[in-house]
Length: 555
Image 1 (cartoon, rainbow, N blue to C red):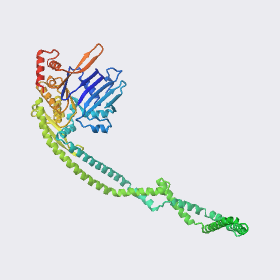
Image 2 (image 1 turned 60 degrees about the horizontal axis):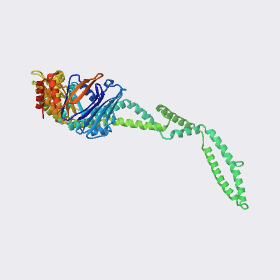
Image 3 (image 1 turned 180 degrees about the vertical axis):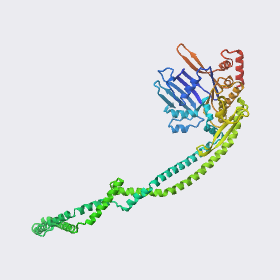
Image 4 (image 1 turned 90 degrees about the vertical axis):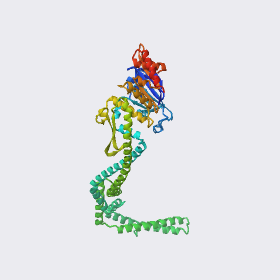
């Protein structure tokens, strides 16, 4: 419930601070006194857009601040989700409009977005006006009323969770079929590409080996000639390096007897002699084993041409990359081969999940059918005394062609205000006043079922008077036992039922006009209701009638 409202520099309000109580509060005042201004200020902390017209003093910022008791609403999840400080009892919502036009919003002194402010505001205050009566024509609102009264919250949440799982499976199937269709279109081409790579019998490192062998075979004569020269330089019997080293080694060995230090040099040279002799032998073997092989060279060149062609076709630069593509093609074709099995398994999962969803949808349907008749009876009994004695009302459940997130039916409220008139959708036949009274009674019925936010009735009693106004006031009184109700009214019958009474009025100075909202004392209430009964001139008879009304409505 709202406990206090502070408004500064807004429209005709210079500064206003007003405290609200639980139960039914009424706000009265002359037409044009500023009731809509107060609602406009309140709408700012509920996340509504603002413009520069809100400023009274264009050089100062406009501020609206609301203090709320939130203990009945279980709003921890909202504060936790938005990383806001949570007090389980008290909450402050503030809106500031700067002269520059920039707007700032705060919850418990923490800056928030307008979306966050609106989400919290929707949970705390419901401003019921003629505009909101349009909701009654909304089939989703009608369905929500039936679900609330039927207590379908848990089963509906369970249904929606299972329905979302079902929709995910369906979406997955659609995507899988689309992938399968796309894959089928390119399957032949993929298989052709794979067969080319498979037939090529690719091997890691093959290209480097072939390129090296190609180089060797291409220059075989030159290589053989050079190897022959190297072998001669090393092992020629007359001038080869081995003969010179052997001669040097013999001389060192002969020195060892008279010069022991030569032993180390002899050993080192002997080791080198062995290495070079082995090297000469290897060079000789290579030279003898090397020969030009045109057939082998031709095969290598053809093989490399194939590898280069495949690389160019697939826009890569190595056999390893070709092997990777070959693996990918194998995977794609394997997936294509498994698509049918995967689709069949998924279709089976969908059928099973649909059965779960359908069972819950049937339970919702049964609960809604039962509540539809019960609700129609309750509403007729509650609305008939409000000037509609011949009211006909029925809740129609229409089966949808497919399930959606709300179940398998939609709800339509059918209405007739006169005898022998067919029941038709509310939006087609009900007048504004009739819809207003229907909405009042619907909210009264819902108030008995769940914790509703503070409701502000903005002149919903317009166009009625006398006994009907009295009964509408009774309905608001009944609602105020479960929630905070604030009614802006022109009717003394409704005003007299308020637990607390406020008056909106204007005052003029030489420079400006101010709007004020004040809490009335008992005497001031009598005078205000007398004014509402008799007009500007308050008569003694009007005062007596006012006291009678107030005394009749004392709790």
